[in-house]
Length: 242
Image 1 (cartoon, helix red, strand yellow):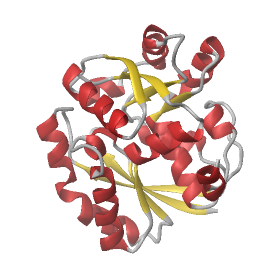
Image 2: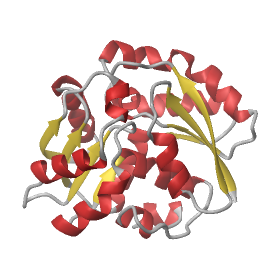
Image 3: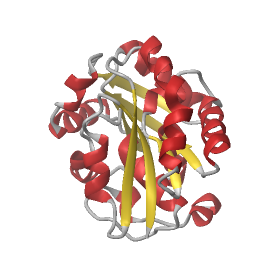
């Protein structure tokens, strides 16, 4: 049992449905929205201006954890910015919090990957910032590619097949895992197929956000159908010790 609070970019139409489908019985999702329509650095930074107010509204629903369920806002200012955002949310709500970028790094480490490839819906500029964040976190990014999209509504309409196709394009023999970034990109239904066809763990930003939220509330029920990370859920303290 538990309640997850999710801060969502206002134009995101994907992350909530993907959360709903994956969450185990008894765990509920409660959301608030932060204005964003375009995936550009200025728009992304502006999105967090309302974050503390919306986080307080979520906290009033007595949620057990609050997740900033957007990748780019939590990596845009480099290493440590995600922790600053977490501290702000926790300070105004009194609730434990995390961000998608924080969850992504923790999930990559959890599966033991040190060298990855990155596929995203982003432009080359935003993709480069994402890669730099992972590199600064101690994760080698051996290659990357993006779909070069800026309109977030367009991203939300993409088929999961686009995630599969890009993952197969960026995959290399010398990497440990494949990372798929953007919570408005339908990745969850592609993960199992990519893992089967590459033999490598796949970490997507929505999948990692779900994983981190469930660990935060102590839910470790195995969730099949969305890759190794959710299928092999473990308590947070066990994961840190691994």
